[in-house]
Image (cartoon, rainbow, N blue to C red; front, side, top):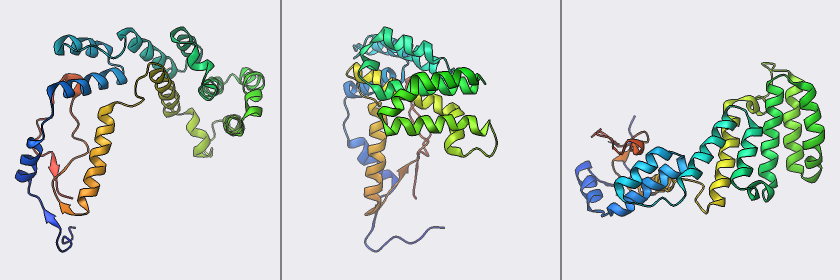
Length: 242
């Protein structure tokens, strides 16, 4: 159901909107930088190398560091926390030495993996020797340790509260991997998030602000350029009035 526009609210037709968009000049160099930044941050090493050659651009980081980040992420996503920690230390030992919160997250993930495997004796030993002392140092760490140990009380029951059962979900592994990836990027003086993602958020904010004063064709949220394939959407119905 569509409601009438408030009095005085301007309506911009699609042809006019597209004309205004085309008037905005963006240099090829800036576009190439956005693409390179996205490929580097998201870990597409091969694509970044190919794009670097095609566009004649230097990567802001060593390509081998991209592969190292992806190996660490893959280790965490398959539950091999020990391998991930070893790889992080090989890349830069200061990352974990100077970030106790991140190191705790990794140790917490290791405890979760012991519980997932049903290795309860090792889980109890590891919690007591490695995590309990850290819990005494920080209320936040203690709360997370208690939440993790609660998994033992429910024993994979369907009645387990979501705040506890989510620790065993693939999302938890991805969350931990994301935190590690961000820390590595920060150590390399790189942004934690691809600039393109930030621009999309800024665009959404701008659309919301303009929507208070005018009705205009809004770009559909699922129309995203296929940067990995160096292509773009050919859907001409990429706009809608809401």
